[in-house]
Length: 322
Ligand SMILES: [Zn+2]
Image 1 (cartoon, rainbow, N blue to C red):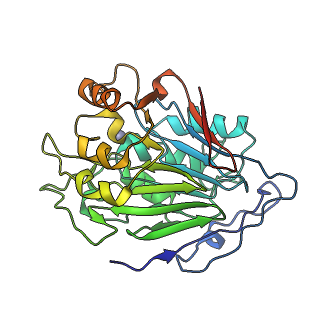
Image 2 (image 1 turned 90 degrees about the vertical axis):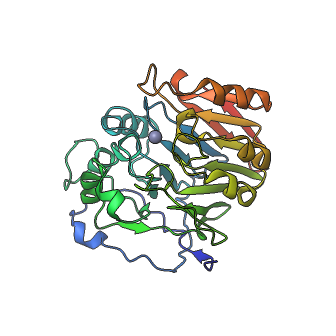
Image 3 (image 1 turned 135 degrees about the vertical axis):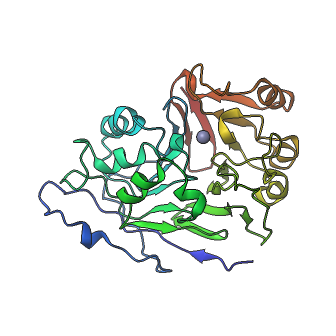
């Protein structure tokens, strides 16, 4: 088992890029164990943690806005969603700086929009309004399977000088908010290694994260698989390591390759969010997954009906809005 690595509490800074000479080289950071205390801007603290599952069509993008104004984005939606949906959403919420982006895996519906987000409102990389995170763009690193993904090269190019690799056991900590990395590329936090198949299954390689804020817990596993249709079963072995959670971001848009009964037996979520686009080519979410969630008494929210937002108060109590 890998040792627990405290990654960050990255210094929060407000954007002043309009008056600051842009130099990408100064943003070339080192991934290390240093913990820097967060410094919320005076008077701007929010009382609640806010998590929005954005309606990006067929894909995923989840924006986490912490009480100390740190902003963490899980996945950037499909190509077009970064410019058309996510940038406008950030602007409408007066967000001009991201702290971290986490790319769960390298399929287009998760990383296609990330270069557009980095490019900022003008849509051009290497200009004054680039949305460079103050922290990192986290991913699993480059491997042969990554290089075979159509949208990996533009993603890797856009994030080249400020990306960092996550491993199981890593923790990203920001005051009361923490992100514990439970699985990366089939390697679990307890050291178990799941066979990723041949050829390796990109969905199964997804980074799985347990997000905790006080007593509140949320699981985001990208497109993590649970067996069926040539998909390795990562979920069943991971499930007891996740434990009881409040909310499940349903993996793989409600595909029948994910969200198996063993996973639900261990995690016991009270509500689930399914992110998918209207009349998508895959038929997501699949009927048997929706039925399984209902049969387990789990309340379902869908981004197809619009952004889904959860607000969590300082006691860890949460409420949904859409
Ligand atoms: Zn996907």
